[in-house]
Image (cartoon, rainbow, N blue to C red; front, side, top):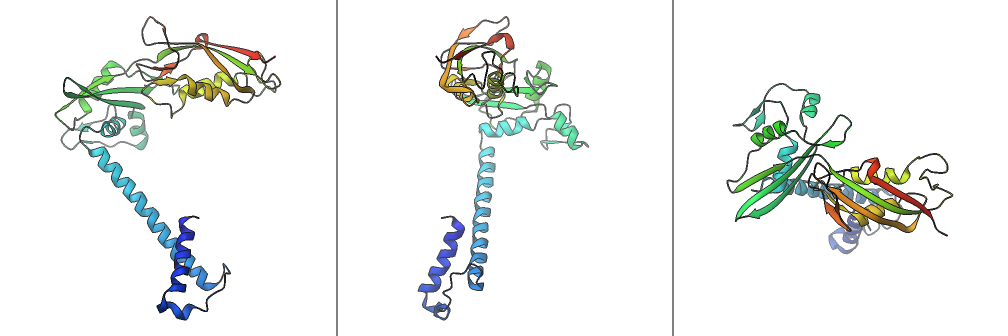
Length: 285
């Protein structure tokens, strides 16, 4: 039973049990269009809406308080996402000055992903901050050193006890080899859908998993979650995906580091090139 119906039932119960409302005893119809039942609905709806407004207000206040707490990571996340490269910032008022259009502001807000970790190093609180921007194709990319220096000068620390370490780099390279059992009436052994609607459904699912906006930017990839994403593809047999080989590299030149369950990207995100993805399409006998 929803809360709205609960409020209506409470009014009806009050009518029937309160001696002061005895004159309403004759109102017994269960018709939904009767005047007195319409009034119980109206009162219940007002009460329900008021409760929802209080819940929203409480959540907003709690979020504001949380963001303002000293050394809270959400404070720095909010601050970094608001950074506008190239716009005049007044350090005393902590506001941007000048006339800018909404488009100007969106263009200048170059930080697209942020991860903040709070660590205690030598009895001093240290925040490790990873940031990334987007290139002209919309793919995540490194923030150049000169811009990162401007970001550092913009961030105002809300506690003298805080030390911040900034990091931005190119995507960690990822290398995968998979065995995938298919329903060959839907997907061919070349990975193409038989009906011609998708030339690479499994590859597309993998890329979507890595590019998903819900993919945690601090960079941890969990192979079991990747397998689950592949299992959702139409034409993949149930429980028939196996990771033969998985490796990643955060260095240039590449130095592959094998992993079997999970790996955390130094940059916070991944690049999986075509030559580093091998998918073996198999048919169950």
